[in-house]
Picture 1: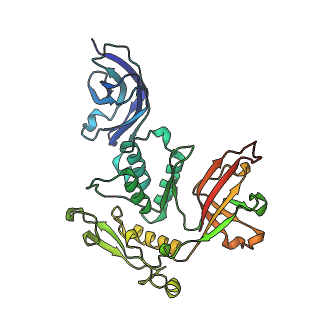
Picture 2 (picture 1 turned 135 degrees about the horizontal axis):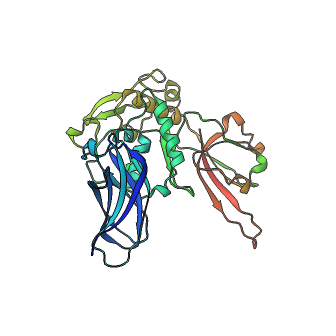
Picture 3 (picture 1 turned 90 degrees about the vertical axis):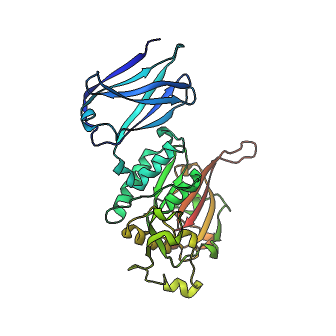
Length: 359
């Protein structure tokens, strides 16, 4: 059977000579390897990318490495096409979300994490909250001189969850799931309060306060960075640099915390294999000592539907007259916020359950 072509002519030539990848989402009605996505400058010479449809009628994201294509063959792309070959049965396919990007953009941790979610985690672009990733990218670029940059090697078998946990820890971020898709949130040292929760908003008797354990206290860090990947696995001996002091916290860490709790370190937090710059290493050390140098409070409470907009990562203040909570000392970052449907039989309204940690 002759090939079938779905040809698209662009409104104007597009210069892809400085780009490294083309990504897109495709959905097709049949599984198999019968599709090719192509680009051309003259509708005569085509460069194509082979696509294997893993599941029928399920969107999948593809990333085409175009680095090997000569710049002269992609500096004025005017045509794209989807070519069907070898299929004798009726088949339909839809391609969208076509984007091109340069590899250097993926130095920003936000771009790296998003790429791993799509390329290795199987997420589609529709399942990622692009707004939050863009905001995190901007915050990471402005956090230190030159911005946060990731560079590293995946040289051992590892699960996606473990890899993502290591990545977000090394760029001051948190990652959350939700109705708008996967969200990435950069953790500011002291964010502005986004909403105040007065006593009148709390479900009666729902507020529970507890203290974080001593195992969470960290008042000093020797942060290893600039990994020498030629030496093998990630271990302290294989890093080329260490950050153990800064203007904010000298060698030995936060002296006031040390005097109260004694020296407290978390060796599992010290290896930053994706960090290559001293400025980022100093920023990370300062951030984590500031965050964990003291025992903090956890708050669990129930709200009603007028607080449904609250999300993990939001900064809130909580006031409760019965416990004489000082507003200035009651600023929390939400760790989880979930909806619990009510019950007409039991007379219970719809509720929002919140867990938060003191900032």
